[in-house]
Length: 376
Image (cartoon, rainbow, N blue to C red):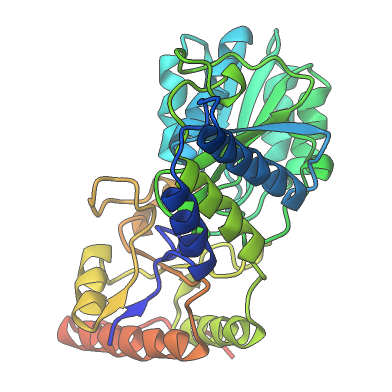
C-alpha cells in the first residue's frame, strides 16, 4: 500500500474540489462571453474570488487575480518591482522568487536566514537603513522545505518605514495556518491551489486594493485587466472549494508527527527549525551520513512517497540551498522532507518512522558508522 507523505509537493484533489470542478466544467461557458452561459461562468469566477477573499479576511481590503499557479503569482508580484529602486530577497525563498529577481534589472540584496530557518529581520532592517531608494522585498510566510514561519507582520513594519512593497509567498502556509491579510500588512501575497487539494494549474495573487498593479500578461483584459487569457473557470471553482474545505490538522495526526519527531531526535537526527514556529504537516530532517537520493530510493521501494526538499527542480535530487543558508552546508545533500495533508492518518506517520529508522540503521551498519544518540 502506498503511503503518500509529499503534500508539500502537491496534495491530492479534494472531493469538494472535484465536485466543484465537474459542476462548473459541465456548465461550460467563457467568463468573457455576454450570453447567459458566459454570465454563469463569470458568476462562478466572482463567487470564487469573493469566497477566497473572505477566507483570508481580506474582503473590501484587497483584490485578487487568478493565475496559472504560485509561480505566475510570484512573477506578477515581481513585475511590480520594476517601479522600485532595488530588490531584497531572503535566501530561503522559492526558486520562482529567488531566481526570478535576477531578470528585473534592479540591484538585488539578499537577507540571511537564522540558524532556525527564519528570515533574519535584523539583517533586513540593516539593509534597508543602509540603502537609498524604495525597496521591493520578498519574504516567505512558511518555507516550502522546512515549514518554518517568519514574522511577516514585523517585516511589514520594517518595510513600511522605507515606503517599500512587501511581497509574501504564502503558498505553503495556505490551509495549514490561518492567513489574515489585514494583520500581515503585506502589499501582495501569492497562493497555489494544488498545495491544498484544489488541483494543479491555478494560483492567485492577493494585493492591496489601493495599489496600482501592472499586468504581466496583456491581451484580452481578463481578470480585471491584470492577467490576460481565458480563465480556467472549473479550476478556479475547485480552488475556492478546496480553500473552504480546509479544516486544519487532525489532532491525532499532529500528535503522531510530534511523536515521530521525538523518536528521530533520539536517533541524533536534526529536525530543521525545531525551535522555530512551523506550520503543521511539514517535517524536514538532516543527519550526517545517509544521502538524500539513497533515502528516497529506500522509501520509494517501501511505497512511501516523500521528497528531498522542494519539488520544483525538474525531478532532480540536489543539495538544499535553504539548509546551506541555515549553516548546515555539510548536510545540505542529506535532507528528507516529509509532508502530510488531508489524506494523512496517524498510521502513515508511524509507517514512515518504522521504514526510515530501519533503513537508517541498516545503512549505518553496512558502512560501519554509528548514529549520534541524543543525550538524555
